[in-house]
Length: 300
Image (cartoon, rainbow, N blue to C red; front, top):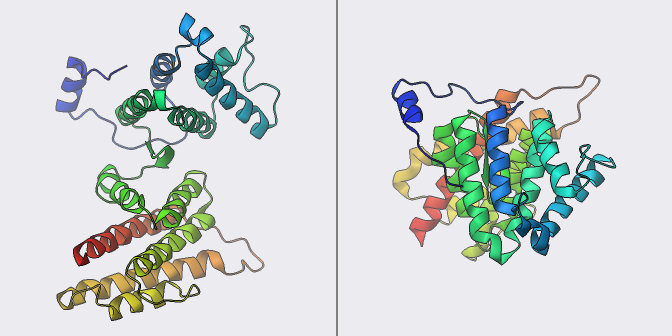
């Protein structure tokens, strides 16, 4: 179901009436209704196609069964129709915990992508849903089947998505998983885990570059040591010296964040990692990955 750029939408944009900030803790009812229309088109729940098509049944049954199991419930919603599809619809319509709604969306997308006949339909579903998120100012986007939190639309488009795309190649899968996991932890408020995974993703990116170019390194080398190796191998041209110095300082800053805020013991008092510090670390991590990607590509 394509997104139509209505006259009222265009006029609202001209008046500067779009969302000023993103929200992360609620889904507007119009967005929920749009989601249900889109899901009906993807899985055909309101027509005979769904009732006779085993793939649709399998997708819905898997999603509902998985959510029941993970939440420890017999039902995720009370459904008078007494079938999986309507139970899922009721869940998406009424569930107040936006994290759980995102759980369901991720599961639907991951299952639909596994069936070759649904690849194009699933891509359309994701594309349209991402547009709907933006229209309603909901700060999430689905990338590679994962729900990613967005803090800055500009930074997300210019840095985060290119970083994920660069890591989506042979040899960089580990770094990509760590990068996405960092944002997943961040989305769920697990700040210390987010910092650790962010740093690991940068280290894995540099190790992958070293492996791709047969540059010797030790598996125990940390980010600081790996930067030195990349310097010695002249990944950074001489005229990049000032930029390289900033990169080294940036990496040391992220390592310092990891060491001071997360990796060390907490001591007698529990230390909370500030949300803005975690956002900064993730944004800078993505920027470093994009920079390394550019240098790696240029060297090729």
